[in-house]
Image (tube, rainbow, N blue to C red; front, top):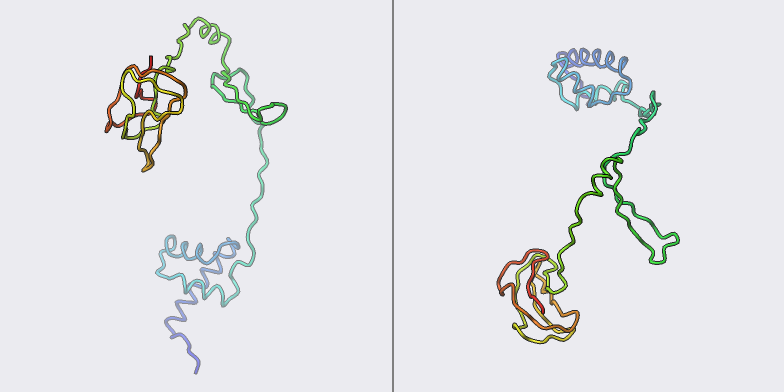
Length: 199
């Protein structure tokens, strides 16, 4: 038993097929989705994707090859800088002849006038933090193991910080004497916040 579409469906299919043939003649690389979208939204036809796919397949109108992108040749040359920029750039050098295997240099590229003005700027020395124990990360200070006036040997535990559910133990890097405590247990610390001051 073979099934055949009714006369009304066959007539509707013929109208859709005629329009599909026109679209494929103009756009041979269009697939069934593109054809359906054009019928649905441009031609305002109430048709589903399955019917469009079936009609294209039955009549050999499906796209059989993909369109390859053609590389476009540039019509104008690339722009070249006519003066140095004032953008700070970081140059990183690889292995080469460097004994350590890696080095980096901070370089500022600027105009001659900007370099003159930069030379006139006063130098601001970074603060001396050698006499402080600084928090290496944000976290919760859970314990301070020293008291003011206590002598500490290198390697002794000074404090403990809990961060990311991990306990981090801070130890003394050298022999020193505790001057004052700058934070209390239970305090939330920021990065580089002073915890202990040394003499």
